[in-house]
Image (cartoon, rainbow, N blue to C red):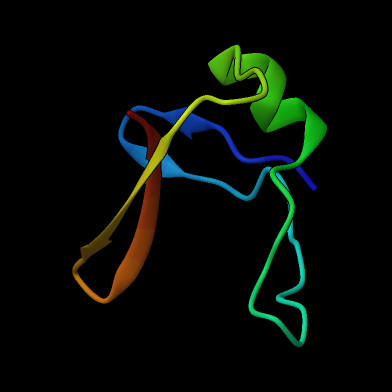
Length: 56
């Protein structure tokens, strides 16, 4: 699945699972778009009842 923001409307980019240890994976397409690399930090925000993850 894909997630794109077009004119302020969010769309699905990917869906991941939460493991028994409450871990999840940053999908490849998200890593590429954010240019994430090992050691980068992410900020987890709660906004209007939703989770928003941004590169720190």
